[in-house]
Figure (cartoon, rainbow, N blue to C red):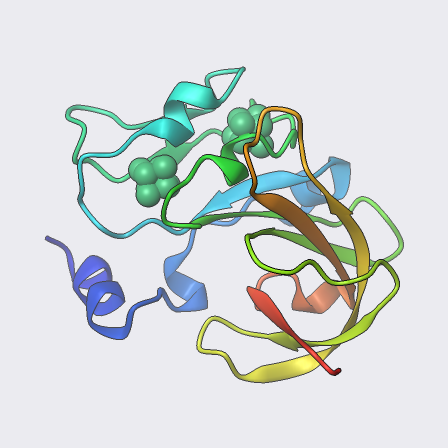
Length: 163
Ligand code: SF4
Ligand code: SF4
């Protein structure tokens, strides 16, 4: 096991510099999935449900998945099938940044102003709930899109409601 995986398991999350993000150029074209799966467990629905084959769990089912950002269409389907909620979406194609996360509790309201949280749960700024949707492929997992300053898209991994 390499050091980054051990560090992730110990802390319960990756550090920003341990996560593979798409290039700035790619994020400006359309949304892209980012995978922060560090547990070597027998799991692969992310690969099974990706309609374009952008995600690979290569070698054996315990391997950590990898993603081809050029193949990824930004559809968001994989996000709702990951049992570990380990997939999120980043998007720099608008005038602002957007991070879309899987969400399984009482949904926030569109337009609601929220505190933006990093991977460790620290408040890193304020954002707005841009969209709450449930894709037809998903059972109950919602996709919540958070609007934010562009320079926060690699940092934000959650939000906290103010009310
Ligand atoms: S967002 Fe869609 S295309 Fe991209 S990896 Fe996930 S399922 Fe595949
Ligand atoms: S579905 Fe989630 S937990 Fe399972 S391999 Fe894919 S990213 Fe990891």
